[in-house]
Length: 142
Image 1 (cartoon, rainbow, N blue to C red):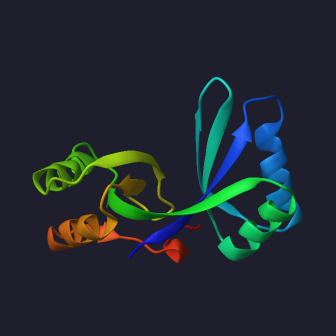
Image 2 (image 1 turned 60 degrees about the horizontal axis):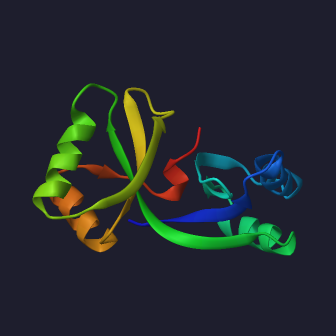
């Protein structure tokens, strides 16, 4: 199953991330996962939130540049080597990971990795066929 990730383009300046979180806080939107990538002039704040459509509307209304991207949420055992096994499966299926970010899951003994792959549908099939657990947006919460 694919999740929709929100990417917000932000000028690389003091307070830029605060401005994004202020918009979401004012709209009563909960951030469930977050990653930030930056360059010299701008950054990309990637978010999984509890109310995606409302978040998009609020961020657009505030004048921010926002896009949606399909990503996968993979649940792996919170132990050495389990994420590596998923990467081996993807590599053997010739699937490239463009970026990823992870966090310890609120479910005991699990970690969650958000993956952006070059072929999301193929990655879904690959990981599912190898017995890996894929999460929905509703699964990524406390």
